[in-house]
Image (cartoon, rainbow over all chains, first blue to last red; front, side, top):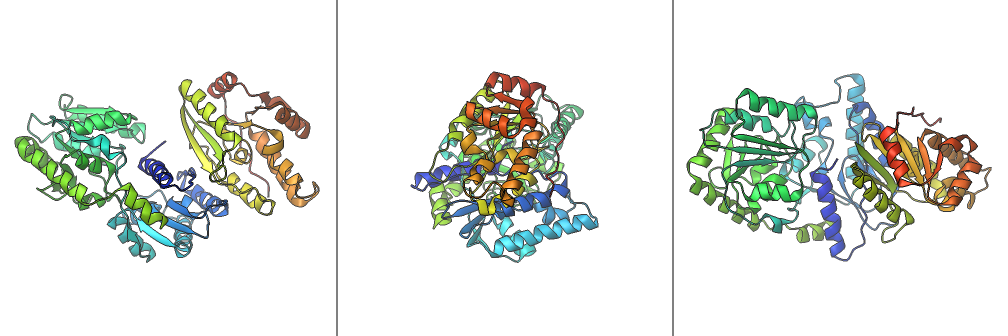
Length: 333
Length: 175
């Protein structure tokens, strides 16, 4: 029931509190299936009231629609299925009169909200571009800091590539498994995280079986304690993260960089491309199994080079100074 | 099985009696092996906007969000779920129809609407568990029709009921 945005909100509350402010977190459940329910949920948020707050920070749709005279947005999630995912066909909004009306009401609710906030921060250039393209709204870049960076101190380098995070078709863990069938025999891959649905988990298990990769691909599917994620990250050789056009840098890749691990990604993964520089801090390939396999082979063929790239990645990450202290200063300014 | 606890947030910087109830409930549910999540909703105790805020809560249909829902006091009890349980801490503080009685006449249209909304929301609950005797007595007296669902709060009993709960039809709040 918890994802990256929920963790982000908890850390934000904690860091605002550390600066001496009084702070409360609101958590509004959002069910986007069936899509017809979304209108009611938007309306519910617009009818809610917040008591005695000097400032409201909105993060996600539709919670950011709750009115307040002094509101800033740190935009983590718009309802992308009404925007770019509608254009790309990855939407649950039907292409019917009702679907178009729903999409129009989402545009309108967002427009009204964006016009009435004091400031809009976006978590990545991808989010900024999308906001400009679809809503004609300018925003300031404010990236999400890493939560608990001290946990990800570099450890010994292991013999596997680690791919963590939620498991679903959008995160494309299946591409890594499809790539593994083309790699040399000493490569190993560990995929770990909670599956969005039983079908998502089954799909990966079936691929591993179909390509007889049981000895080289490990699946740890389920909600894992943070300590396990830390172990898997800090003991890996490198990391991989291949989402479709994701807004943020991605916790998986930030944690990997903090742990001095190079990251493999693909050229349509979105925000992460601001972190991964091909052949310097990782590998950027096209989202094709054979191309990804080539990068995996390179990571294992010259491990010293892979380790050097991981160290470069950590240096570049630390240089960016994306910290909670700076983030909270800007949000509550 | 996952359980969603729905509650409203206390004033910023303040602590409400629901905070300790919430903490105990989460501990008890986790010990029993449930996955627990909490919805934290804003609410302003102001009779001028009460009906709009109740309607906002009614618009949240969390049927597919969790297997079971436990509302902590009103107004959380207004949120819809086919397997909804309600825990009421204190009669005098937590029922909006009682609260609104302090500011407007009980014959005022707003008071009548709030009472009606409470009646509908209470009828939706699989069980209503009262932490204190005054809550039990007050609800039994005001809403005799729900008497069979009224219980004194007992975590062991609640956990057993969560496991065996069947679906209950969720009615729409009449206009």
